[in-house]
Length: 65
Image 1: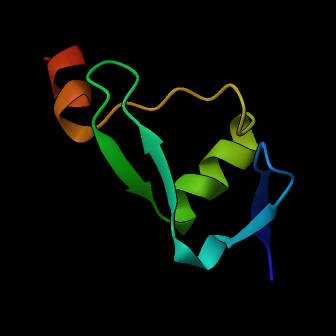
Image 2: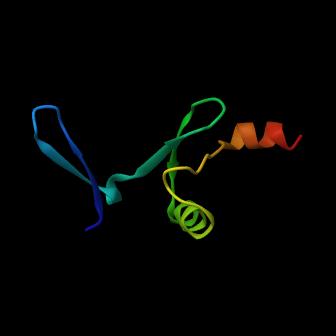
């Protein structure tokens, strides 16, 4: 199982399986979107998870109008 984890201020560790979904927010409008395997493949191939900025479909369409 691949997961991410957070530690609360009380010291509890919460493990979150990535099969629950991987999400990001649009870099322009902040709309939440779920990323799929193809999205993750391109991010890992061309960039990194910490600095990648993603646009939603609507903002992408406006940008290339």
